[in-house]
Length: 125
Image (cartoon, rainbow, N blue to C red; front, side, top):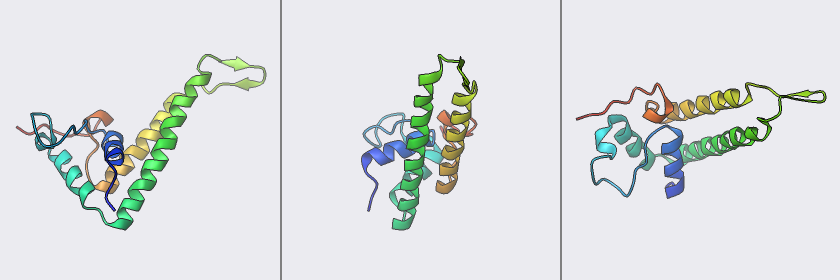
């Protein structure tokens, strides 16, 4: 079973690659990134069991991403009675989220994309 369009979007986004748009037209598409082309190729050709693993990554990443957003609810509290906020919570959660994003890249065998930091993806001209 092929990925839904929303799943493909989330896979690209989590791996740090830019939006794909409507397809192979224009200047900013996969043809200008070797790794992006490899990613698109692999996303379209995974086996059923590999798609299941990728969907498990997507579910885990959705939970981790939501936890980062939810952590903002306590950013205004430093100390409340006996409870003390972890001042590094957002950074810790973001680091964990990014670690799982890099694991997803490793599963697909592509370098982390430009939006994920030290991905090393180069523009090919």
